[in-house]
Amino acid sequence: MNDRTQIDEIKNKLDIVNIVTPYVPVLKRSGRNYFGLCPFHKEKTPSFSVNPELGLFKCFGCGEGGDVIKFIEKIEGIDFAKALEIAGAKAGVKIVHHTSPQQQKEVQIKQEILRANSLSLEYFNYILLKHPLGQIGRDYAHKRKLTKEIVKNFSIGLAPAGYENLKSFLLKKGFKEKDLVAWGLLVEKNGKIYDKFRKRLMFPVIDHQGDVVGFSGRSIETEEKGPKYLNSPETAVYKKSKTLYGLFQAKDSIRKA
Ligand code: ZN
Image (spheres, rainbow, N blue to C red):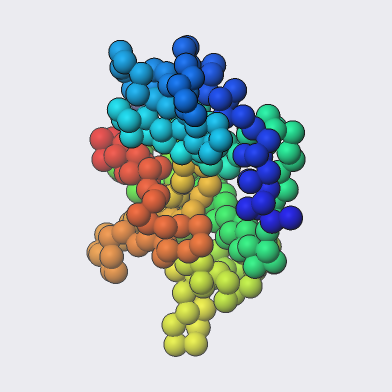
């Protein structure tokens, strides 16, 4: 059974009129359709119709329309997957998730990237707060009036000077060099692989789910070498148009501080 037939089975088992009724106080039959006051917009005369044969609803006032799953999605303000789950439960159909080996592999890679990022975050944070290598970062933070509280709240860290700090830490955790290059934690230049972020204050980029999807490293050199901010590249977990909240939040409070 594929996902499509699963969805059809759910739709066939559910009576859209039953699903809609609790949200539409008076639903009156007129010919093949039922009419009532639209739950999606304010109105005084009914322009919301339900067709049980086709399993569809349509509002001629606001234009909202679709099948029973769409109705649940809209009325509950949830996404399709969640609506399908609710519809499945009501219909007594258990949703079986089919993922291809390819999809499973993608999920696995994403988890690996997130694990590497989260370990790097811990590493940078530890260096800034406790390690002797972090002294330059602590001096910088002090000069910039970054309190311990800000450092903690925004999980700010320090990428120390040197080329193989994060690299040896992550290799010990079992990651492969070429993966770490692809994920933007290391760089490869002239046949050498080394830490991408060096002598930089590290700000994690956190997505809406709270995952560390990348980093922005601010140079703490007194003489500027390279860009002021160095950012992670896009990866399977980091799409720049989609993320940035935590980073901007951090930058903003740091600017204010
Ligand atoms: Zn409407």
